[in-house]
Image (cartoon, rainbow, N blue to C red):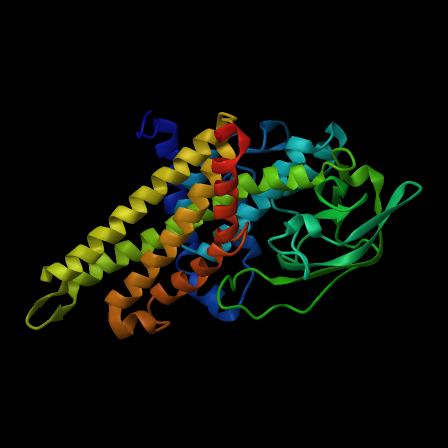
Length: 382
């Protein structure tokens, strides 16, 4: 058990911190206000290896681990949670292709994903199946060398702006064993997109429905065998949950640092706010929750790197705890800023809006509790 980062980890942590502070942070409020998808800023991150953090080096990935990814996403999210979160989704898709794709598929798709010349989206959720993901209804009928897709995916980050849509579709019977995973390329006949959703936060990435209407996708674009799609999707989400948790850490840390400075500078009743013990206690609790959340995320990431048999529960625990804590810390920061925290002239409200959805996506925190409880009460724990 070692809580000290290696020299290499400290080096790329500092690289990410400086990059985020200089290249993303000054622009983040304007991206949010204009609902701008900052593609060039994402490609600048990709140039540092941040678009394929745990993809192998053969096709341009960084070849790092999940703990490394957690460190990097925290730093990036401290500048812009929404943009870092999209980058985390792109990383998840790239890893799924690297992990489950054939040599031909990896050579075909990964080089442009690692540079973000191509942008990726993860397509699991549907209008009628959110938490009950295994009930998805999008159908893929085999027709010679193609699948013909019909159905709709909902709440898809990057929809309409991306190039690669990794879609979970039903090729067999009901339940998880009837699901397969297909790479759908933008420009494919029968692929279209719904209107851009108007959202509370995550405004630096477009969100829309992905619509398949007799959409023909080559069988050669299937990852793994038929019926393996649900397993592939869930393995992707284990890492995705850690990434989103790490993004919550970054947003919460930014709010904590801003609140500390505010308490030292803002004066009321003749003295700095930081001299009031009630407010000191609030700041102490925020810092303690942030540190506890970070340790849980790192433990989950280390478990995933080590293929620990308890990795799934560790990831679910980390996601549940860190995203809840992240929102609480941002919310407490807004309270301590008073009316200023509610203004868009200050960054707190942007972080608060962006981290809120982390308690919902990549599996709601209620579903995280279901996963944890099932593991605790299952036969192996009897």
